[in-house]
Image 1 (tube, rainbow, N blue to C red):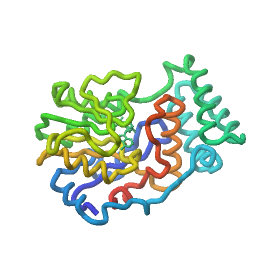
Image 2 (image 1 turned 120 degrees about the vertical axis):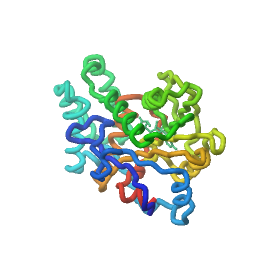
Image 3 (image 1 turned 180 degrees about the horizontal axis):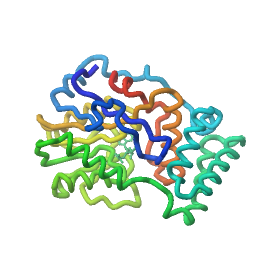
Length: 298
Ligand SMILES: C[S@@+](CC[C@H](N)C(=O)[O-])C[C@H]1O[C@@H](n2cnc3c(N)ncnc32)[C@H](O)[C@@H]1O
């Protein structure tokens, strides 16, 4: 257990259910810094401990939307996330979307086929809901920048890498807030979004091996990436390698407290990458979600 650093974990907000909005840090006393950070020395000693290498005991869900829909607790979470979240400004479409899920989940279709059908349905209604479909992105960027600045305090950052930068919006916002030139900001992605332009150095990587030199980065951020990673341990070791001696890693992850929340989060990811967008190159792991205490152990 890493005793002197916490791990920032969050629950996906289900009562106002926007896809990527989160509740406050569950550790109320740490609410001011809802992200957690590790200095390179603490991080190194934690990583060097033997128990670090196996998180397989954390379990494997192997379930998705069909199974979720049969489970009344998870189904209610999905319904709330649709009606109070993404579709809150267009409830009639939310209701139609849920009816479509219900019909598809009662059919013989597989999970993958259901997501394909939902994607077709979403494409059909998209022109009518484009302005009302809620993503809460702008608020999320601002929150993230504020949290990073709080954690950094007076620490000088001259070069920064965002691992798993997604569409790069948060990366850019942090780079600007730290007044970094574009060539001092790098985004690493396993799936570079084909429809996005990245205003910084963007590099594709295999999810583990980082194409940057040793000791080269003052700050590395890893925001909600670990639950996607097949080899989180290998990725963390690579991040330690590229951090400069006084470098800082800021990590953010979901707190999925039980099997229902784990399954709900997997379904939310699949909705995001297979239905609401066509970013199907983002790997979704059925066993990627863990509770805060499980993350702390590993
Ligand atoms: C939930 S998104 C988060 C994007 C961005 N960090 C944010 O907070 O908006 C996670 C991203 O991590 C990427 N990623 C980076 N490293 C990965 C790895 N080792 N395995 C799987 N996905 C990885 C995924 O492709 C995906 O774009």
